[in-house]
Image (cartoon, rainbow, N blue to C red):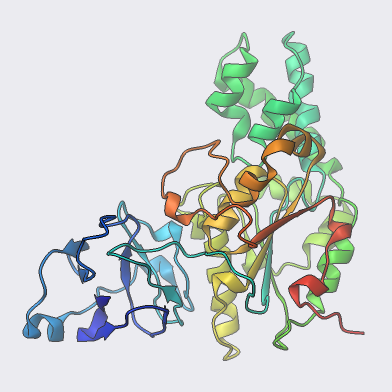
Length: 387
């Protein structure tokens, strides 16, 4: 398969991983699925569209990559959903790319069934319902309002569907179910006030402090320190309220401020919420930006371990090309007990966003579920605890 890349350079390889330090654009959508289609694809870097004819020698010597988007930053060695256009994504600006070229004129998925993985170098955490009990606090607030307006309390099913979805209590799914006698705007004001009152009561969940503390001092199988980042859809003002208590503030202090990516983070402008991969890819970009100063090589998506409690979050991690540990909330575990394998592959499809090439496969080894954070198996991921 032939691919023309930036800087007038051409690369040819029939199969296996490609490694190069160039800006490369690749289509998110298959160009052809026909087994008789040509195995040669040409990309025009500047027009951002697939070519249908082979460039002339002069063209292939004169390709110049456009500058990466300003918000790409340094150390971006990953596909960034936040930088997506309709058909194309940036794969790299200045870090090593590992792109597995597929078959017959299509850009493949970033994950594949595997029996071995590179050493884990980074752990990226969701927050709500995983590290702190904020999902239970949100449920309390919503149920108080539902009772006020003489509506039934949250069911296990609707709660499981909405968990991890940004602004879920203002979504069509919630309001179609709740059938409230007030406007969405009024409910948003009421729920915001309830949460303002109750978010300061949030506390760490069992095992959260010990796990994060252990990882902050651990080493990977390759000898690297484990880098930590937070990727939470919560907004900054809610984050401050949720971390008011000393024990909660201490837990979140393990994540350096520039490695916390929140829902209204400037780095998330024009980005999509979970189940899109954007927030996890931006978190990885933040990690790579900081370790670049120390001269370390960029962390790749498959060197990251995502910790999530929601269906949407698991799908986001899988779409990002990262390994995932799904910590089962009781409501989610009961509601989806027959479909856990689908959830681990990111294939629940509760919210349709397209780009199905990003999804995993059933039993592909990229994700697992555990009942709580205390059950995490460090050894399984090659993470060595320092004595």
